[in-house]
Length: 473
Image (tube, rainbow, N blue to C red; front, top):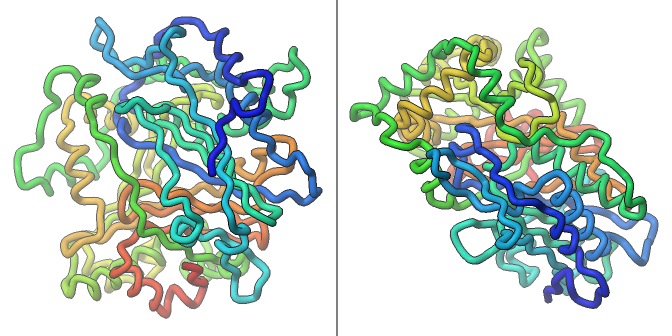
């Protein structure tokens, strides 16, 4: 059963939105390049204090609408191409794309959807079980293409349970991972301080995209090696970007999430052991990438009964710490570093050698490479399409796309009732993509993998992987 945020309240959280002024917020090329993709997140909170008013809908909704009105009006605007041919979010106070915020009551305890580690010390939330047995077939996704909301919030309340889940969905065009995490924390901060009308955020966001265009205007592009490699892999001439880049990118269809998701857990000790065994001189993330690259390649060979020609490893990296762009910038500022390696060589190499090869490709990130990425999107869109065709697990290619969220301040998203107790992972984009989260219960990490079930069965039987990891689902 679902209840919206207006039920039973004398004041409406949406009243905060009445202060929003008409404005157009220009989108960057990086924003528009991810049009059609959502950020969907879910966090599990525990009512450890047995608070009868735990995570109340009206207060959570009020905090959301207040922080949007004061700092994030982009969340209630609508994308369009303006008269100058630029992609913008148009915020029209007479036609806001209003948020959809509601409670969902589930007639089962949250524990019905939980998994435990083999020692019983760590608890995980299994989204597959939730969708299969809760009566909630799927949580809604934000959209601009229908008469729905561009920002969706659900508070999921479980029967006879100390847990509640917070789910949110909005367009990835508005934020990258760092910007989104800052938004969640700012929303929580605003909610904690609702009773102080004069309260100001400690670190307000920087929303204007001009800081990015101004910075890159003085940067000379340098092409990273993977760009020419992708051109070479195309069976047809690479498509040039036709006409208006804004019109092309904003017309992208909505991309469905990938639902064959799996979870692997590494204890703190086992995660460090990977580094010691692969190469003590490398980072734990690089050592993990080397392990996964060989494990995925072997799974590819088993699944497709052939040797892929290329093995790819992709790391996102962001430019805030490498540039003068403000750390509080909220828009998309993430680029990709891609290692491409001959699969036969990967198979024959040691883990240490694979780690060194990945580092050679992916450590040389710079503003010059980032500027080239922007130029390629604006002038040679076919390279982007070829990346989508190459970065996958198939008979021809093996792929590890590794997003490291370990340093994101996710456990600090505290609305006044404590931070999240469990970090599940909502379904996200693309086969082959993976996300790493810290697990504060034991100090280890959770690795969420998007892999087809027929291929994952080969991964989960890998003796090399099982030396370090426990497969949860």
